[in-house]
Image 1 (tube, rainbow, N blue to C red):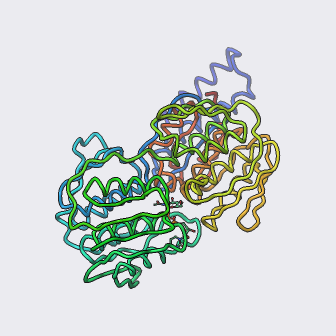
Image 2: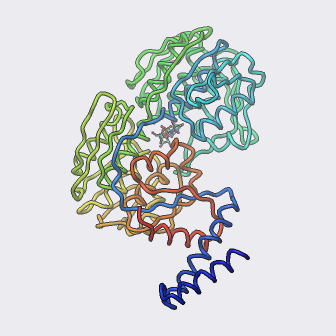
Length: 486
Ligand code: UD1
């Protein structure tokens, strides 16, 4: 209470000496109350964090891209197939990876950080694995838990894994994974929300995938790398992370040829040996920062990337009027003028990635004209468009196509992330918007972007992670952020 008395006395003296007018007093009292009550509300932590973003600053500077999450998940699964110690470098420190590491620890694999301060290098030894069933509340939430089926089946000829969860982007069957395991000679069945598989022996087969599936390609590669004889996967996915997982398996002694083409040949081997592997940079994280640079009319050098992996994204951004300079292991993205509209169709690699659909749509919503975005991989990937509409975007979705009529600018609003990439897209929109945006459900974003807000801040973006469960508190914080000068 003392602080309020002191503040009252301070105001009274200001009035007596004519420094403030009576009408200003009300505003000062309000501000004082807000500052003090905000400190209280910030101490009341709750589990649902949000991002508060003040838009309007062009992103400028350099940002370093982390290791590829989707590569890392396949590589960690492959690693438990080895009974010697393997070292994995450039591991992204994101929630999905940490959940996956906990899952492999829970079945008996040894996981160490050789340097406890460095969360990007781990050693894994699979010799202590004592159970071939993996189930916990966390692993059910990540899609790539299915890689443990291929890995355990290949190594132990049996596996039971909780059916995968993941982002909310539509139906995600795993029939092609099952088809592959069955072709190798395994039985596959579902029971108690888990998928089980077992085989007396695994024999190489010629497998033609009905759809191009990253997950099925990697999963079959894992199991077939320890089968007898040769497996051929036709209509295989060609994504960079398929190649990265194959290279890691080969380092451990597997015999895999053709990864990166649509036909992969695998000759099974009996055991794996120690290996040391550095995960490739994350193509989607890099693409996300490219779009953030474009949407905010910034100038960002995105370092530690493989420019070849970004070509489909660069090509579209260039069509829209951005300038892209390819360096050895970096790309510089500069946008100065109003963007042009274009058409985007998501396709398997080397086509435009579905994981970049929402981020490029945020840029297209600011273009001078109408663009078409067609989603060819997942049917439910336009949920974010309703949220973007709250920020002023003009988007109509019909079937798997979004018709986007560009607007001059976004305006800040309270929006909800529906999945990992949609969440990142809303953050980009917030950075480009007038005023303050609150992005809720950021646990999705934390699954796959390392140090997201720190990286954005290092480029001059204004973003804060807060934890407020009270709408009044949040609105007050947004108002203050909107008014503050940065
Ligand atoms: C992976 C990525 C995900 C990305 C997606 C497409 C990981 C952990 N996730 O997901 O970020 O969005 O690739 O690039 O790497 N399908 C079937 N049957 C199957 C498997 C897939 O019909 O058994 C269909 C899917 O419904 C989808 C298409 O094939 O329409 C591609 O899916 P897939 O490549 O398997 O995606 P994921 O591996 O799950």
